[in-house]
Image (cartoon, rainbow, N blue to C red):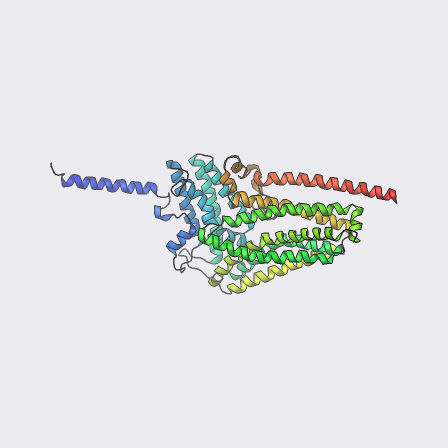
Length: 465
């Protein structure tokens, strides 16, 4: 057997090297090598910043999300399997739950830019994953990815400039006043929904001579605060170990939907008393003690749900700001100052509702309170569906028609960026708007029927007199 000439061996070695280089390039993301992308922020942080000495900027995070999504496009185009760490869908889905949320990007945008902006970005994540799941063309998926990265890059530039982060990842000290404003806004925004409900119920009880019933409302709120602390600790431990924040969204979504049912019940109960002689009997103490306790417990449960829904989220938000306080001058003063100022603002709103609510005439007060409860139930329905189906990835897991419903309605894209609509739980998707429209129709019909029934009873009672 003849020996293979050295030149041929050298040629074969060069060819093998070229094949390896080509394979490596094909496997790499479009804007970086294979080692430039990570499936989770936790793995990336461990790899590039094991001792916590380096500041990871928001442009760094955007770069990594971009690399991950480009890897997803490469896999999608190459025709690999759908599932698994090496499947084409993993990069797309991990870019949200294992990166955007767990890196703190989402919470920081919500605090320093706006909650409406977060929802706009989250909807674009959903649109991108919908395009992938529906088997759209590579060009269409690439376009959705480019739109998402554009949004993330805009936010990253704002945040990095705000915190004074350099390209080398060094902090310029941050801006304490911006942190104060962000924490204040978080406390006020998250607390406002709860305090509107709690304040209205307390004013309602005092106005009807049932001041003792306020203990149920206050107790529900206090228990909810304690439960929120426990839930925040549990969720933090879960997300720390899994690199994923999905459990938080599921808990918030389920709580919101339960709150919807209770708020509808309370709203209907209040509106039924506004036009009826039965209300006069109620406030004069002619109802049984057991019935009275039953209603008070319902109000207490409503208070619990309203506070519990927001409590854990506020605690987790504040944890993000405390972790950044060391990097700025007077950082802890800014965080604590924002918390205190936010609580004071919420307390002022509560006092205003209670004082002015009691001064309002009986009938307008109950009408206004019941309408407020109805509006909050519709808002909770929208936000609950959003948290479950988009943030909690329920639509993504179900796929098909349900995921299509979770995509942005093109004609309603103008809704993106509105803080008012975000507060009211209104988003440009059929998965949220559909149930809200149905509930709104049911609520209006119920109100009309109850008002007519109350007017009829009033005429009957007048004729008897």
